[in-house]
Image 1 (cartoon, rainbow, N blue to C red):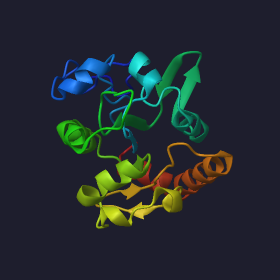
Image 2 (image 1 turned 180 degrees about the vertical axis):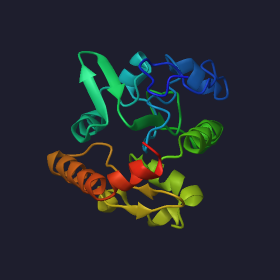
Image 3 (image 1 turned 180 degrees about the horizontal axis):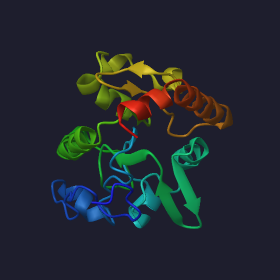
Image 4 (image 1 turned 120 degrees about the vertical axis):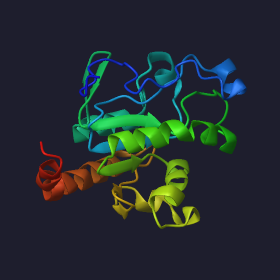
Length: 202
């Protein structure tokens, strides 16, 4: 396995023809599994692929989130090519429905994929994108009640988790929110990054 993942190859051999959700099988173009270096210190989790990600296989393709991640230095873009840098990009649900968000049953059907990625990557920081993702991660990975999360209020803040920190990101940030997120991540990197790299033996 190439830890740097230079191509959009499914790094953990996850099912690319998954049929767990029959309705999504009819609407998706592809299963969009996670992408990025498998030794990443950051894990970015969205709710589900958008239309561009469904077409290209690149998580967050065509969304403001990818622009923010580029500003932070988590991705590099050259034309249509996207390379993840020290961040693994993934979703709660791997298939797109064009008319609605994922159901609770669909999130549960993909839970094994996300759990496997979190365990194998063992990130230092998780970036949950949007309210639904914050709530989905709360029970398993924090001591917070899911109903207590408010991504509007907690965007670009640090939430203590079990074994790592969460830094929520608004899924459609305005310019002020983008700058706030970038600055917060830079502060975290400046404060902790050398120690983090030391712990991982880099």
